[in-house]
Amino acid sequence: MRVVIAEDLVMLRQSIARLLRADGIEVAAEVGDAASLVSAVVAERPDLVIADVRMPPTFTDEGARAAVLLRERFPELAVVMLSHVVEPALAMTLAAERPARFGYLLKDRVLDLDDFVAAVRRVAAGGTAIDAQVVDHYLAGPSTPTGPGTLTGRERDVLGLLAQGLSNVAIAGRLVISERTVDSHVASIFTKLALPPDADHNRRVRAALMWLNRC
Image (cartoon, rainbow, N blue to C red):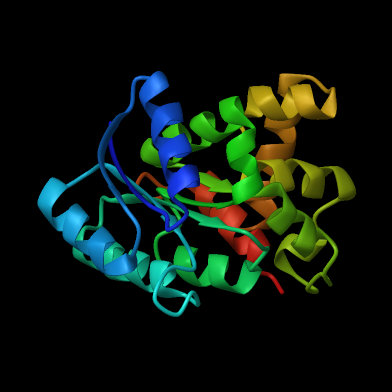
């Protein structure tokens, strides 16, 4: 896997690069602004980009806008966005059209070394990785009369962990239930969300996006 890192904080950028290299991931380029990110991706054609949402010169949404541009130009490019704060609306805007190969993590997650690398690899493989704090924000929000609002409390727990990108085995361990029980909950979730088997779409990703976008 080849990665381009875009982060204006030099120490954080270098720390992420060292962490990835230690796990056998090639860092093709390290840059500090959105324009350089676009140039690096065009030149290096990486498998995945790790980018700060807010970058120079205005520190608003330059990184996010660069990510949107790059995903349009390179549809197979995986993207992990980093942020200091929970910005669920921005996360959902970025994930809306192509939730696969997308991650949105708070920068604190980088300190959780194993989880961070696992999230990066999961996104590169075609999955999602939405930060638990973003998921918690939606758990606290209102439910709709149909769709995810019809899920039971346990199904909501399962789908919340699914939205973070966890496998059924990992969900079972987190909730201290059997994997067979998780399989049953996931099947029920797909049924209630009207997501029949479809070879062209990842149902887990689509279910997570539907749930996170319900508000």
